Image (cartoon, rainbow, N blue to C red; front, side, top):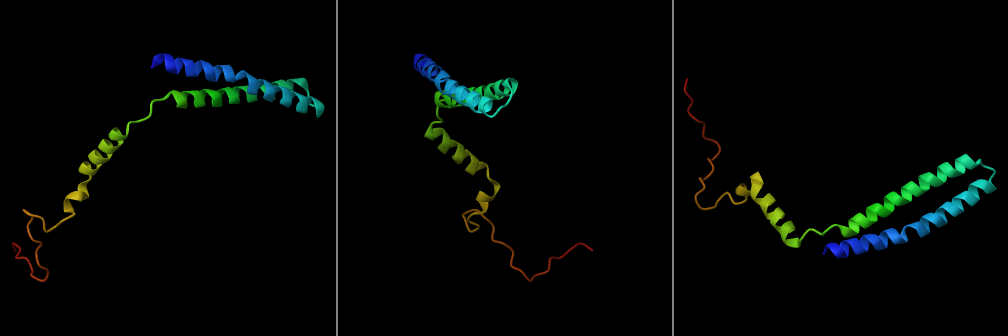
Length: 111
């Protein structure tokens, strides 16, 4: 399994320079054609390269992450259902429950 992940990681990194290079080429052409300075072009290209590298790394890491098994999701939902407080009041007439007091009778209080 480890070799599979490393192979996918290498393949993702190998595909990374081509789009970044195209993007840098196009940005440099646009900025220099508009009369912008070289430092602005380099700054924009570096920002674009860092952003595209961040996106590529997040895509690669998302592909390498193991999916959560469905059984764990079901178990988590069942555990949550058991912890919920109002579920025990779902059936007030269930066996072992006292009947609610009828309204209208005043309770005797200690005076």
